[in-house]
Structures are given as C-alpha cells and as structure tokens.
Image (cartoon, rainbow, N blue to C red; front, side, top):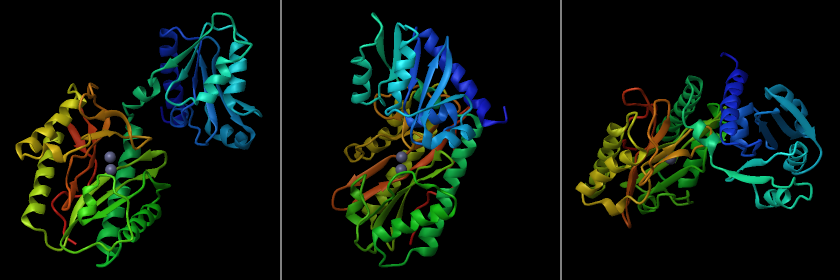
Length: 367
Ligand code: ZN
Ligand code: ZN
C-alpha cells in the first residue's frame, strides 16, 4: 500500500460496502474534502458517483481534464454541463434505481431541487439524505495521514517560534503579527493558514474568536495566538497564550487554571472513552476553581483534512475515542475586561492513551 491511489481504492470499497448495506443503488459524494479523500482530486469542481453494482465514476469539467488524469485513481468523465450533478443524476436514473443517496450536509437546495423536479425520475425512486458516512470514515487516520498532520503541526510550531521570538517587536500591532505568522507558515511550506489567524492582546483576548486589530500589543497583558496551517491537504491547529512583560496574580491564576484543565483533558484521553468525558475532565477543573462560566466553548474537535471535523470534543458528544483519531484539546477561560487564556494542542489517540503532537512548550512564555 505505498501508492496513495491504493488507499483511495480501499476507502472507496469500504464506502461501497456501506452503500450496499444501506440499500442504496447510488451515492453521490459532493463534499469537496470527501471527494479528495476518496479520489485524490484536489480541484474545486468534482463529484463522485458510487454504485455497488455499476462501479465508481468521477465527474469534473474540462478545466480539470489534465489534473484529473494525473490525480484521480478511478474512471473519470469530463462533462460540459453545470452543475455536475445534472449529468451524474441523468446517467444514474437511466438504470431505473430505487434509492439514490446524496450527502445531506453538502448538496445545495438548488441541486436537490434539480433532482427532485426531474421529469425523468423513475416511478417509486427515492432520494435519500445520507448522514456523514465519509466524515465518520475520516475520523480514523492512517499512519500516512498522521504523518501529514504531524508535519503540518511542526510547521506551525516552527512558524510560531520565528514569528514570536525573532520577528515580534514591542509596539507591533495585532494585525502585523498575524501577517508575520501567516508569512512564516508559508515560507515553511504551508499552502496558507488553515483558518484566520487569531492575535488578541489584553482585554481583546477575552473574545474566544477575536479578530486581529490595528491596535498595538500592550505591555503587561496577555497575548493569545491561535494559528494553523494547511499543508498537502492536512491541517494543524495550535493556541498559546503568552505574557507581554509582567503579569499580575489574577492573570497568572487564569493561566494556571487553563493549563491544569488542559492537562486534565489530556490525561482523560484513551481508546474507549467518550469525547464528552474528555470535555468533562477539563470542565471539572474549572468548576474546582469556580470558573465554569468562564469556559464557553467545547474542549476540542477532530482535525485532519479540515481543521474542524468529527468528533466534536464537547458536552454531549458520545463518540467513542479510538486509536488513530486526531483531536485538539483547547480549554480556555475568558474574563471580560481582563483577557482570556487558551492552550491548544493537537493530539493523537494511541492504543493506551494519547500522544501530544504539538512540540511547543506550555510553560508561560514571556515576551
Ligand atoms: Zn485553534
Ligand atoms: Zn481548534
């Protein structure tokens, strides 16, 4: 199994088995990341039709003829019409199917309507909204995928080090530091940031999803950095909160509580545990500090080809953790007027616990 195309073939046959089991004649995969996962296609307009009886066909348009020939490991059809599903659907219904599945979280209303309103729809044929089957497959990573994620994670940690400890200057504004972080990630081989880089200083860091401003990064304040890269189709995600100058006791206490919560969540990770139990471990630490109201988001999320994927490591998520899953662990605490602290690592679930992939230290760093 050295060639990536072999991996794609195995993934498609697993999905075909599922399609068969669920009694569908055909499934259309339209989610861009799922299409890439199953075919290797990196372009923006592709659709995969999978039929246990008639095989697998990849649809794209003529802009991608050459790229599809190079990347895609199954049969390719180049079509002229838009959207692709118009052709794929027309071809599928010729075989008089009884059930056609589509991915409910990615097909547009217009595309659904195009199928629903088709006059050629065979009598008794049913359109079936399918759960995130491919997303569930994507939760367990192959060793090759884990290596890709590890490389993205290390790239982010190196860029963090250069941006914060070589390029940062007192008086710099949040936006300039964010640009420096993005620049360093690109120089190290990122296709781009995996999401909009967060640089938030002082009270602004109390907003969990703060956007970098033109404001100067102030002294004796917290500085929250949340950053990630896309590299070769895989992502990374890391948060560190630093001290610019000296912190007071309240800020330091906030930092220690978050660090403790993060460690408690990491300690809770092992195969067989439910995602919500990891979340509960972090929450229990905040409760002990009387800070449960200051932690308004989930403890983490799955990470892979997308920066946010299944499972959600939060309240009520029943997903059972398995070896080979990659998740983030990122509790935070936010106090209005003072600021926020979040510490986020990317973590691999192993056979007996977990391995933190993020190499950046967690001791409070001082700028
Ligand atoms: Zn993050
Ligand atoms: Zn995250």
